Length: 230
Image (cartoon, rainbow, N blue to C red; front, side, top):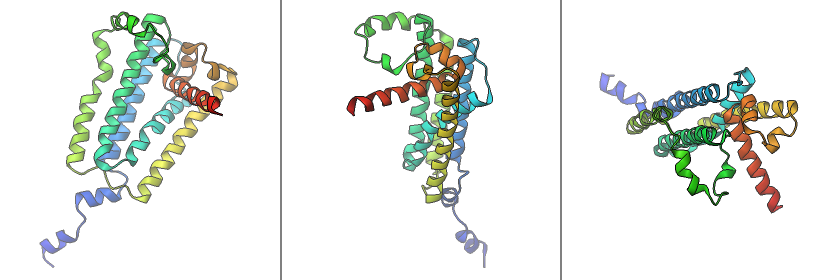
């Protein structure tokens, strides 16, 4: 059998990548999660002086990111990179909102703040005036990941959505949910009612990390919405 026949029987790059879990797209997603986790960790250390990174706190933050990012890997291949970069952009904007709220209100941003105040547009310019040039560093990774996502897409490196791949993504999401729940229930046991009320946001974020605080904020909003409908 000559070389051409042998090479024709070997799986192409796209086919091989489609069957494997260690695809370039998955590697990019893992790197992106690590970078965003680090961004929130450095924010916590800079803004919340009493914040201490522990195993359970780090696991909770990682769990929140896994729950948020893993579903993007279930999308069609050509949409995965754009979805991941969009999530990175939204989380970076959330970090900036937290930063500006801390400078203006000495408090953290909540999704409940969106559209609740009739004076939001009046104070927006005042809050934006607190932004500093170095705050742009929170967005420095986005162009890099956007270019990387496009390169992977052009090389067909995202991999086909096989049953094994889908089951693996769901398993990682379950692990993420477990890590997040571990931290939330641990803190709720130490300070009963604090997670539900979030009356002192910086205090909650100091103990849980900003990512877990925001996850708790979202869960509370969902719970309130369901309670109103029932």
